[in-house]
Length: 112
Image (cartoon, rainbow, N blue to C red; front, side, top):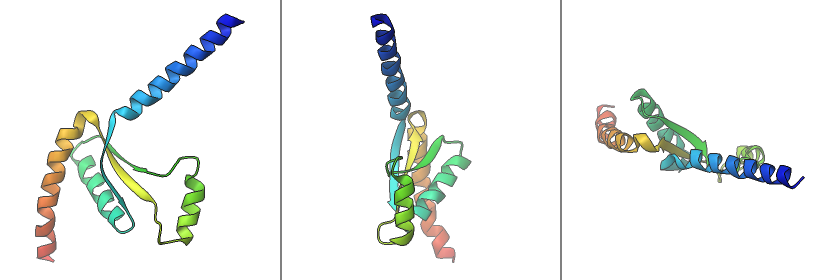
């Protein structure tokens, strides 16, 4: 009985460690909400096209996201906040590419 409880505790601790180590591999490089979220999505697509491992996630608590998303659909003054995460192994590459992206943006808007 005691061994079973100890084994269960070890499995829980190991699972928590795995979840923590997986989330520690991601670094947030940008966050945005409202109209700025469109630019964040464009940067995400740009990094993906350059084979950078990245993702867009919501800052909201996963348990509350459905409630908050429904509330934000009604309340446009408090839009959901998104963040652009890059895998730690691609962080330097992503920073250099985002710098290039920013340098090209004024040129693109000047042509319009």
